[in-house]
Image (cartoon, rainbow, N blue to C red; front, top):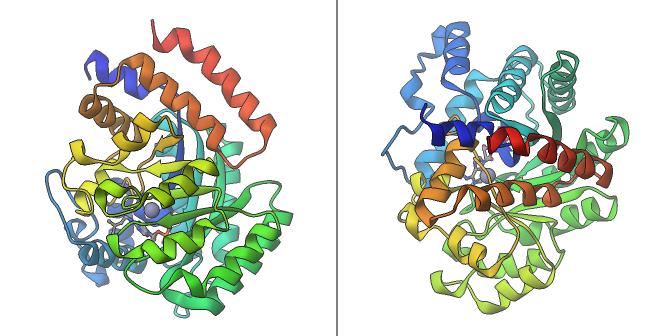
Amino acid sequence: MDNDDVFYRELPKVELHAHLNGSVSFQTIEKLISRKPHLNIEHSMTAIGKGQRRTLDECFEVFKVIHKLVDTEEDILMVATDVIREFAADGVKYLELRSTPREEKDTGLTKKNYIETVIKAIQQCKNEGVDIDVRFLVAIDRRNGTEVAMETVKLAEEFMLSSDGLVLGLDLSGDPTVGHGKYLLPALQRAKNCGLKLSLHLSEVPSQLEETDLLLNLPPDRIGHGTFLHPEVGGSQSLVDKVVKNNIPLELCLTSNVKGQTVPCYSKHHFNYWYQLGHPSVICTDDKGVFCTDLSQEYQLAASTFGLSHKAVWKLSQQAIDCIFAPDDVKQQLKQKWKDLHLQVFK
Ligand SMILES: CC(C)=CCNc1ncnc2c1ncn2[C@@H]1O[C@H](COP(=O)(O)O)[C@@H](O)[C@H]1O
Ligand SMILES: [Zn+2]
C-alpha cells in the first residue's frame, strides 16, 4: 500500500448504503460454495470484476445466484458477521446494513428468523469488540408488490420496538424497471408514521420521473442513487428543488453505477453535480462483493476523479455522520471519534 492507500484505509468512514447479500466477499463466497458444491456455482457468477460492465438485468441475475448460496440461518449468520468484520477492517466506524428478509421453504427459514439472525450477527460482533457501530434497515423488494411491502413494514415495526435501536428503518430496492412506487406508497407512509426512517432507491434508471416525484412527497429521509434526478440527465429542476428543499441526503455509489452502466464513466458520475451544489452526499459501496470494491476505494475514486484534497475527503466522511439514522447521541459519539482520529490520519 502506498501512502495514499493508507490515508483512505485509516480515514474513519460511515457506510449508509450496503445490501447484505451484495456485500459478500470472495472469501465468504468460497466458504458458501464449499458448503453447497451440488449447486455448481462458480465465483465468476457472483461478482463483476475490474473493468467489466453488465446490464442491469445481468446484475440482478447475480443476486439470484447469491441467494441460492445464502438460504439458511447458518449462512446468514456467517455472511453477516463476515461482512461486518470486513467493513470494520476497512475503517468503517458506523454501518447501516440493509437486507430483504427472505422465506425459504426448503430450509424452513422465515422472514422473522432472517431478521433475528442479522441482529444476532450484529450483537455477536459487538460482543467480540469489533470497532464498528452497526444498525439494520429492513428492505422491501419492489417487485413483490403491495401486500409483501405492508407485511415487511409490520415486521420492521415490531423489530424497531424490540431490537434496542438496532432496527432503524426501511429500504426500498430491487430491480427499478419492475413495479411502480405508487403501489408501495401506503406501506411507506405507514412506516414513516410509525417512526421508521426511509431510504429509497430513487431515479436509478431514467424512466422513473413520475414515481420519483410521487415518492419525494413522503418525503424519504435519504435517497439511494438518484442518478437521473437532475435536468442534465433528463431529470428536472423541480425534482432537484424538492430534494434540496427537504435537505434529503443522497447515497452515491460510483463503481456500482459505472459497472451497472447507468452512468457512462466515473467522471460523468452525478456525485459532481450534488457536490458542487453543496448538497449532503454520502459515498457508499452498494454491493462491495458484487462490484469488487470497498469504501476506502470508493472515496479514493471520488477524490481522484473530481480532484478532492485529503482535507476535502475528511470533511466528506465527517459530514456523513449528520446523515445517519441513529439518534443524536450516536452522532455526537461519532463526531468525537473523528476528532480523536484526526491526528493519526493526518500524521
Ligand atoms: C443491478 C445493480 C447495478 C445493482 C445496484 N443497484 C441496486 N438497485 C436496486 N436494488 C439493489 C441494488 N443492489 C442490490 N439491490 C437489492 O439488494 C438485494 C440483495 O441484497 P439482500 O438480499 O437484500 O441482502 C437485491 O436482490 C436487490 O433487491
Ligand atoms: Zn442499492
